[in-house]
Length: 174
Image (cartoon, rainbow, N blue to C red; front, top):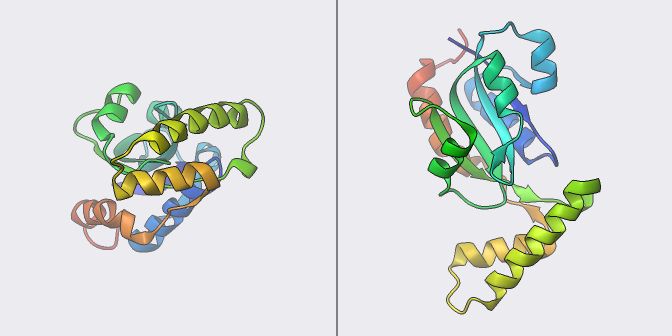
């Protein structure tokens, strides 16, 4: 039985999604650091982590400690990279996997992460800006890379919430 929602967040988007999901399910929400102090090994959890260079941050640690039937990866890009992220992070095929668009907060990044993201977003933005036939999603991503911002919204949690309702038996943690 799922006991908690556990997350790792860098600039706040993943934490926002975790709290929204907690409100919908009634499950307690805590950071991975807090979970390591409060939850027993083997506890079943839902895990949310932010994406950097294809890695879902904190997932490997969480997977060593807990049973995880559902993972949400939060990054700048909208959904569509589920299988790629599943394979790169070793997420079992029987676990539900969702990608949620979070945001980009360059002012909240520090050190090597700030430098890496400046290089990555600069390169990606240049390629997108040069593309003549951008989709509305690509226009939005370009805007996000150039100016920062948040794309966190309860609507983007529709599929994970549906999964929870189907797999938690209504109230969630009873």
